[in-house]
Image (cartoon, each protein chain N blue to C red):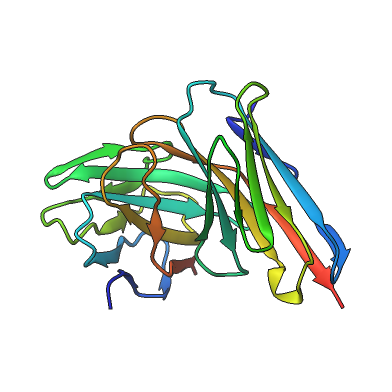
Length: 114
Length: 109
């Protein structure tokens, strides 16, 4: 089946640790995104990539890092510099960044700091 | 002012009711518009795109008013399964999608 796969679904992190969330898509989409959602809040853009080997900061990039070495993959690392990382993380993709293209989401990853 | 604003609700309606949500956006150059549905603790899923001429999909009707910079979603004959949060999404440029905070709908028996 075509789609976006995020892993792990649930992750617990100790303070001071870096963790990496995986995102893989087999939709042949050029553009990929990472969003963060806090309870009762909207989605906020962390990073996005319009093409392989290129990515841009979103609205809340501090404390996060990404890579886009392959078209299918856009992993997100939550570093120890992110002071409040507990949230629901959503990876998304669309065919290209052009207007009118809808965006599709993975099932999300729940990150909790313990 | 937020770029995309929605009434957070919740809208609590009986089954069979008609309910309408509005969403306003601040950038008059916005190019495309969508409604997404998000169930509790799940990812958002596309409900429908919104076109200038308005569009309908079964019990759901979406309208766009560019002059007043708002979009609307009308749900007729509400079902229990319609209970969810409805997100207004605006494509503000070629790459950036702006999400509203969502309007929560509760349909009661």
